[in-house]
Image (cartoon, rainbow, N blue to C red):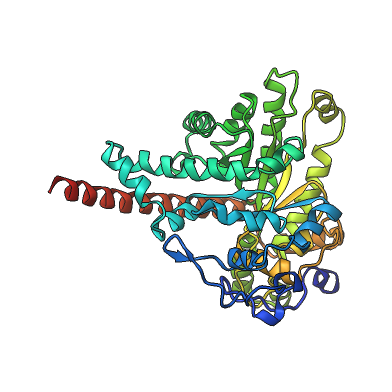
Length: 433
């Protein structure tokens, strides 16, 4: 068991989260006629520009044609779409990333909480909204919708070139609706209507209450990014909701109704590693850092099974597209692990990997572009079974992580609304003086 399991991880230390890579370790494409990314810290609307954007911008310093990166190879050679898990103003900062091979963007309430609270780029629009009588929450959505619309415009060429298969920007319904089936449906319809872009994904959490929402939203012809999936059992329910929604839609052409299923990876190891350390046996400790990738590989096996056979073929005849697996939570939380641990072993066709700065930097620098998603599947099965034998309940792990994920997004959302309300009240007082 131990020998087989060991194939699932390689002993390469992670880069420090959020820190730019040292100049010597950058790929040559980023060094051509460009200053060292360590020194490229241009202002980004009142805050430091993210390392990955600074690096991508730096490489285009002399207007030379964009050189290929591992992100281009990832898509062209292996059929996996690299997306960027971040969004902030100025949205045009995405242009050098698109040129470097990024093909879509994901956002969530925590990302917007950081963007809006740490930047002055939103101040003018926020002031106009407050002074026009909007409250804090309405203003929040106006700020978010503008960013999503602007980002959709940048990715529209990719959407058009791929006939609607790629180039999406994701925006999440309010995290306060995570346990509200019908409220989520109405929020998804509203967001889809007001964003009004063909390449927007409405994010819906895979909570038990929102799985029926997914079916209804898909049946309404709205494309969905299903988020916060932490277990294979819940993932199967999400696939079924997608298929049920397509069948219930009544549409003769299903080609423009697409979906991704965001299967979270690193958070699984974070929780299970703690459980293994508590067990403390040599076997338990040898399984640290292997649960997440093992479960993800088995999720891909389920994907292959569910998107084949007579039921799926009947939908294909109407133009249906597979609900692609999207690997989320790809940044390494434990610095002892390889910094591409949640990207390199999960590469395969018709999948998406959405990466925050740390993971994207690491993969561009030293990621390996090779089909790995269906390699060592028997080892993955061995890890999964070994963890069960040690008393790890995968469904319980999924439920706990789902609760934590929903709670984290709610806290970010509520915190931002409180600060926006305070800011709005201060603005009103200033105007009334």
